[in-house]
Image 1 (cartoon, rainbow, N blue to C red):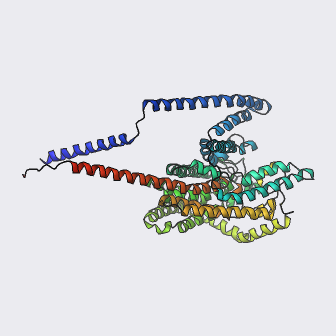
Image 2: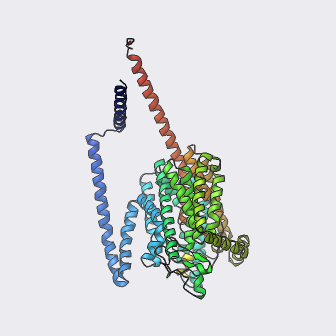
Image 3: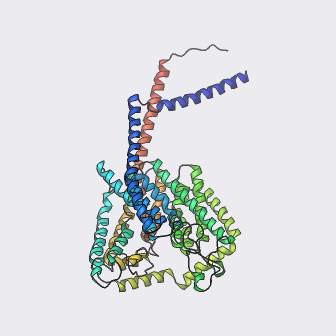
Length: 563
């Protein structure tokens, strides 16, 4: 009898599982034959459009590539031939192009120097971004949807843009008639692109992320990119340490202390590896050690968001792994600012997001992170001590506050006129168009380029943006969404008022800052969607209960005989 009961229970469980599967299948909307044919026609039309678009862009691309290969070299011909198809497809499919832009950016330094390292390749990522931006704007116009959302940040942004354009035309433009060498107007155009060119990512992010699913995809994508790049950074360090890459330790004199492209080790660009002189500056997957250091600083916030905010336990574990890898790379990369800011930002995130009070989630992550870092410290105590000594020595020789004060004084004294000395005149990336002045802190650099008024306008804009993003994340009710918003907002807050060096001029912070500000502003809309879904589910459950209840009442009960 016991066996028969267990068999009957197993049968019931199997039938219940089948019933659940059938109910799920029944919940899925069944399409009529007409609707199925309409979907097939739509898919066929999209394929035809893709083929036509490829044909329209490939022909001029091949023609341009052939000319470039004859005039310059075959490698440049391939690059030139890919420009037109890349522009065309990015314009046609802007959302896919923007995701590809975010994926390509961390590996751009590696790709650039694998293909020769020309100045044209440095701007290759913008071949995805700029056409996609135009295409997305055109799509919004066709669909009669507002592109510039929210409108509340437009006044301060408009003032900042107008003052920048005044500097471009009345300072850079007038320099064409003076004794200035180079091409000051082109230098100004490129300087404006570097200064405000990625601001539209605020609006792009809100059109990309329309649901919680897309937000999780964005977080997990950046976590995967961080883990991949950090593993490659560790591998680069091991190749140098094992001697498979020569580094710069075999050189002599000043070359022992300079990052060199000739010392490049498989990935990234210029590096400095002279352990005999306690000098290590690794570029990771980026063009220079400076870019790599700020990639690690930025990802201290992005991996933290995944570790504490993702709804999946496995992805939270992945976030822990990402945080640990970021910490380890901050130690071995040799960038003092990464060694200082990665742990500092993590502590700030724990306090400002309130996660330090969430002991159930914080203790396992904290213990796991401590174990991983403890193993790393125990296996390389000399390396860690070298980094700490280097950081202390630099801070004692040139205290950051004194260095920043000196830069402000220099910029204020050397700025000519209310509109500054011209856009791009203190930006490293514009040196191909003319001479530049080396200003190593951000807001003094802005004073030098766009003057005190332009700098105050930009400061007002980022303050307004920081306040607006704070309001947006505070209005979110969903705990996970609010946790994501808090993590990203701390990153926005830190970068908004950071003046040490110039992260907003360099990848990836120049992209991450504006993009994740847009992600925060998209959260209230996603939150409202989630609340609507919950209400619909609750209403459906209530209706199901009422239907089942009516059925039970309608059925007469049959008395069972006593055994």
